[in-house]
Length: 125
Figure 1 (cartoon, helix red, strand yellow):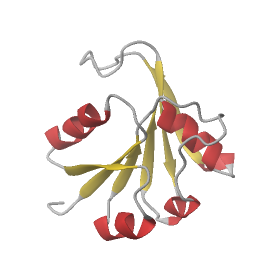
Figure 2 (figure 1 turned 180 degrees about the horizontal axis):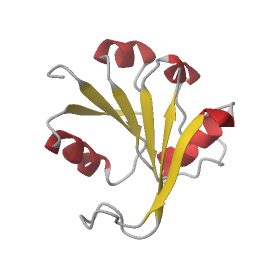
Figure 3 (figure 1 turned 90 degrees about the horizontal axis):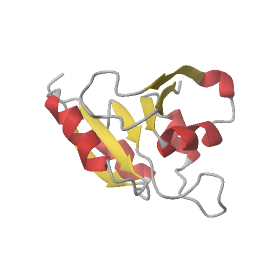
C-alpha cells in the first residue's frame, strides 16, 4: 500500500486541490494533473485509481474537455465528481459498465458537498 498513488485529472473545477487533499488525508499519495496529460504520462504515474474533477464546461458543448478513450482500458477504478461524472457517462460506450451511482448531500457532514451532487464510479476491465 505504501506505493499506491491516485491521480486527480483536473478539468478546470475549483475543488481539485480539496479533492487531492482529502485523498492525502487518507495517507495515499495523490497528484493533480491536467486532463491534457498524455496517456504515456498517466501510465508512467501508474495510479491505483483516477478521479475526474468537474469543470466550468458542459460535457454537451462542442469542444468540451475530453480524455483519451484509452484511459478506460487501464483496469483501474475511475471516480467522477460533478462534471467529471457527467463526462464519464458521455465517454463510456457501454452504460452497463456503470457499477455504482449514488446521490449525496454532504452525507459525512464534512462540507465536501454544497448541495445535491452525484458521485459515480466506473470500473474499466
